[in-house]
Length: 294
Image (cartoon, rainbow, N blue to C red):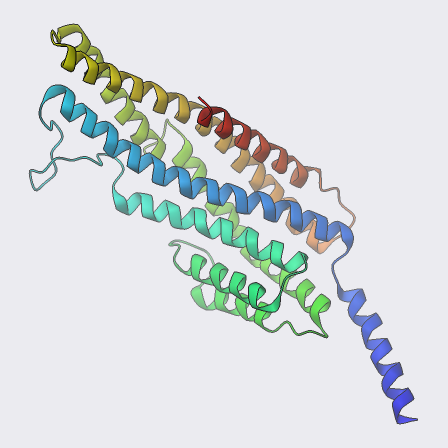
């Protein structure tokens, strides 16, 4: 009798828990958004590091062209990083990594993931957001969200995963929106942020190379100048393509973030905007691959 009662109770518990699980539409919405979020976050982190490295390379070329460092810092040393100081780049890379960690955690929660990998994704998520300044949630609140993931057990897995997804999406939503805004500003060539500083460096090198080509009489000087001109051309073409497509992708990600929150709270909505951000990410990948092949 006790055995039958135990079996009945277990069966009822399974039915109850399955009812608490995410629906197929909710999983699809979270999965699409998670993949796009992880991809754009990883891409942005790579690009900001490229901006800084390329800025230093272009300033070195400018020095080679005119024979001296015209940009000096407060220690009277060559100012090779110009408008892309390490502090600003590191801060934005942290923002990009936080966005990526959010996507990877969601993806782990809505797919078949081993317990150790799920907990690692949770730790990465918490640590990434704790390193971001100006966020709306406190470090303690992010640690609380992480504990929801760590509390997932084998028997309660689907119900606990659903609980974690809903809580993380709802509570982290405003910070995801803010991260998108920060990244959009840094990919905008007209604002006083990373892309604008990168664009200014390109313009300086292009101007130095053009002047040198007019004045240089030796083959070596002309070769240095033309290589500088080529370097500026390649980086400007890269920035023009990447800036426009990255901003479009991040803008759609903001819209999709709102829709994801709604989809998690109610299953009666379309998830077209969430799918659309995936297409924008594909456009971004195509732009990157086209530039790399040149």
